[in-house]
Image (cartoon, rainbow, N blue to C red; front, side, top):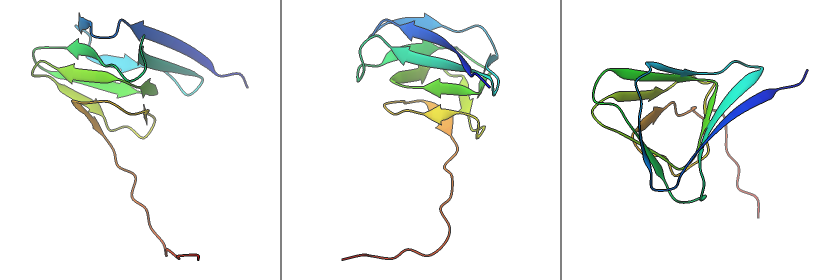
Length: 100
């Protein structure tokens, strides 16, 4: 099976107003949100409501504006340097051992 990816590259430092309530891909077609300059955030803004992400890879994003930025679906990937998004922290269970 081939996985498709739709990639949205935002200019580093830019601000984009979001009107949609969902940013969605599928298991076979992941959506990627990234900056033109890795390590420099772009900003997504929405004044109210909730933006729900599913099957989305997010990196270098600053989500602002009063909306709730919900990336809690375990189908999402936090590639780092993101602020404003709510991601699910996958709990670690089991025993840990130190090796010397």
